[in-house]
Length: 473
Image 1 (cartoon, rainbow, N blue to C red):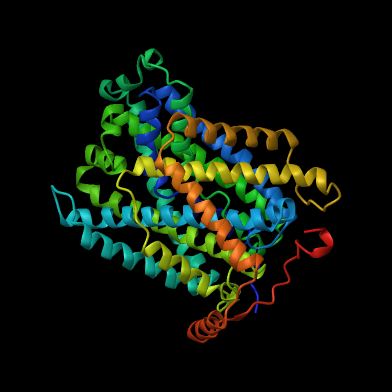
Image 2: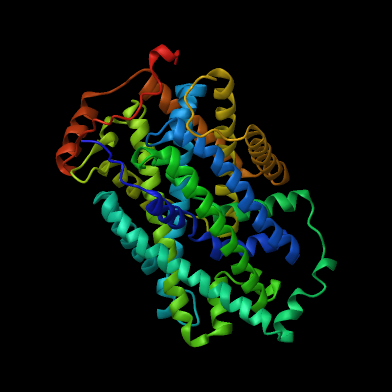
């Protein structure tokens, strides 16, 4: 039993569209505009800059996926470069960030779907959370059915949300070209607007980064990609280029119809936009946005379950997580993610939450880039089917560190302390469970019970072994 390589160029693009385009494009316009001091040119420039930065980071990640063509490639890179402790903490931090991000997306979907039943007021929390749990567990069951089943769902959902964003973009262009004073006036005298300072710019970039979260999906699934050296770079370049253009056009469309103040005062920008342009079709945009976020959430489950799978195969997480069912899916890893997300507590302020997740993403990105650089000097003869240009690595490291440092120094608060506490707990867990290898008879009984319950068996992957003793790790 092993993970099979079934993802080609087409499905690689589909998975990236599904993973990247989610809640971000419908939430982040508010934050980017707010921290850009309502300056439209700066706001649009930041959207373009985020696309370029993610492209550079993605190409660097492509080197990871082609050098270590295994599921959870980033994990193996960090273990090879920095050792087992850092690799484990990478998984530990990523689990924490994904639990929060996934729970936030599912709750957002539930809000969109339940809002029409409570016109003129906010929906109650209980039915919203019940609906969110139903959606989450449905996605978990879908992922347990294997990659082929997920693929058709991702394809349909990706095409649906691309159609919605193209509709919004084209409508905005038509309104702008038509030359109506109401629409054109929003872009007049924009150069006279106030400019944000460095800390505000960093905040705005973090908000924009959230909309591009998910571009590393294929890297974590490199063990299921056909011919990774060819498929990974082509899929990433084509998908991110398309997404960046669509995001820019979508934001221009929002600004054509709504004023900057209207955008930052709306929690559902796309719905407000549709209500202004086609009031009778408002329900369509709500349904489309919900499908878009559900699709992105499914991709997040797919990606993170592979990282858990990789850490389990290396003995850093319980062995049961690396066992596969008859559909070649790490079923227990998927269910662990679903259960943890179900009990996650989500802050009510989405902008602060995006900033929190964006900070963690920037830190992990910087860690990956430093690992690539270290390995270039540590193992120069290591086979690299795809080798990124060295200045791109330096640039990606510098931009990630800048975002992390500026955000922490600009607003040091209790949330940052929570991150360090969580990191300390991760070190403690590693020392007790992995370093001392404390596996009790009770845990072995749980493993056997779960193996029977989920009908899973140990995997026999032929993925390259990256962290052997002869490598000095």
